[in-house]
Length: 365
Image (cartoon, rainbow, N blue to C red):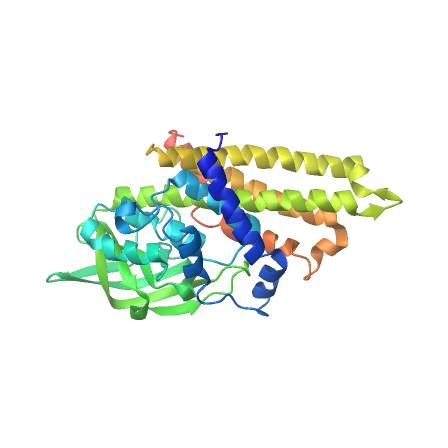
C-alpha cells in the first residue's frame, strides 16, 4: 500500500471535514427517504470551495490539475459518507473520457463548464444488464456533412436526472466512437435502483446532435473502463472503512448478557477479520489509482482492485448487520444504506466474476 503524501492527506482531511459537517449520515438517511433534498447549488459551492468538480481537470481548462491518486483519496471520503453529490458520476467517471481524448478543441468548453461546477457529466456506456466490457455498441452515430447525430439507448447511468450532458459510446463506419450529447436532446427515464443514495436511469437518443470526442476509440474505451473500475473501487473502500468503524463502535457500547459484546471472541473475530480484509483491499485500490496517475497500464490492477473492493465492501456490510443484530435490519438504521450501495456498486463496470474471467482470458486460459 502506498504512503499518502502530505498534500494528499491534507486534501482528504479537508474533504472529510466538509462532508462530515454537510452530509452527516442522519441527513443522508433523510435524503434517501425523500424527506429532504440536496440544495441545487450544493455542487457548485463544493466546486468553488474545494475545487472538487474540476479536481483532475488540467489547469489549462480551469481545473485543479490533481492526480488520479488524489481523486481516489477523495472518492474514499465520498464512499465513507454516502454523500449524494455527483463526485463519482461527474468529477470522476464523467470527466475521464475528456482526459483520454486528444481533441482539445472539442473537449475545452465541456471541461471548463465541469471545472466551474456549472455543469455535470454522466458516462453512459452500458446498454443492458451485465454488459461488460461495453466495447461493442448498439447505439449508432451518423455523420451528415460536418455534423453528427446519435441514436440508441443507454442504461444504468449514474446521477442520470441531474446531468447536463452525457458521454456516450456509439458505433460508426470507422469503428467505436465517443460522443457528447446534451441532456436537452435525450429522453430520460428513472430506474428503481437498490441504492437509495444515488439516482440511476436510462437515456434514449433519437438522432440527437452530438459532439465527437474520439473516433476509432476502442483503445480509449478500454482505458475508460479500466479507470472507471479503479475509481469505483476507491469509493467502495471508503464505504467499507465506514462500515468497519460502525461495527467496532457498536461492539464497544452494546451490552448483552451483562458484558460488552465486543468482549466476546466471535465478535472480536468478525471485527478483526474485517479490518484485515479492508486494509488489503485498500492497498489494491490505492495501487491501481497510483498506477493510473503514473500513466501505467492498469488493466490487471484495475480488475484486482474491483474484485477486492467489491467483495470486501459486500462482506463488511453483511458482517456489520450481524454484529448489530436486530437493529441492523431496521429501516431507521443506516446499515442498509451501505448494504445497498455495496450491492449496486459491485455491478458497475464489471462484477467480480466478470473481472476474474477477464483476468483469466488475459493470462491465456
